[in-house]
Amino acid sequence: MSKSRAEAVAGAPGIILKYLQEQNRPYSAQDVFGNLQKEHGLGKAAVVKALDQLAQQGKIKEKTYGKQKIYFADQDQFETVSDADLHSLDANIMALTAKVQSLQQSCRHMEAELKELTSALTTPEMQKEIQELKKECTHYTERLKNIKAATNHVTPEEKEKVYRDRQKYCKEWRKRKRMATELCDAILEGYPKSKKQFFEEVGIETDEDHNVTLPDP
Image 1 (cartoon, rainbow, N blue to C red):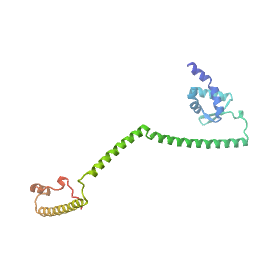
Image 2 (image 1 turned 90 degrees about the vertical axis):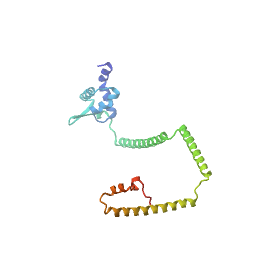
Image 3 (image 1 turned 180 degrees about the vertical axis):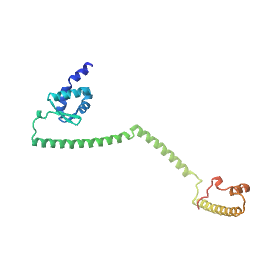
Image 4 (image 1 turned 135 degrees about the horizontal axis):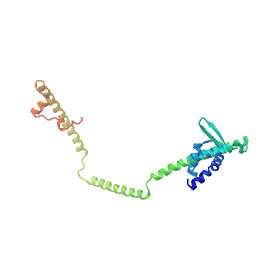
């Protein structure tokens, strides 16, 4: 065992007694070990040994619940607290609790504000973004200028004529397709082979063969 480790073990009873008196609440050996191990480097065996030693010396109290032992400071060493003092302590606790809640709320607000600021663009990033937007605006302005200056604009009359012609040709397309379908169906009634074989022999190509769909009227 190293010298520092030995010193920690030797001083364990004093450390644990002070801790229990300051906290003034019941703890198991595991609780004491977990709370003091990191700061004082006490091992589990040293904590259990020190607690048993203090209990045997009457410096702390020990209670057994099933298989677990609970240790706490001897209450006789503390002054008796009056009802008035208890009420004062309760009021102080309530005030401190309210203060803690207020501080926690303030912390949440500051965390939200920090998150918002962290996600926002920095000044150099903002300046770069502005420059890119200006370039984009210049591009669209120039494009709009060219469009306005063009002489080949489609007039409303020409546009309307295109729509009328489209409707006319689609109507004729639909009519002829219906006539062809009816004629083929009539032939197929007495044809000994399948529709596909008939189309192949005659050389008929359908809209579907070329992935063409008749537009809506």
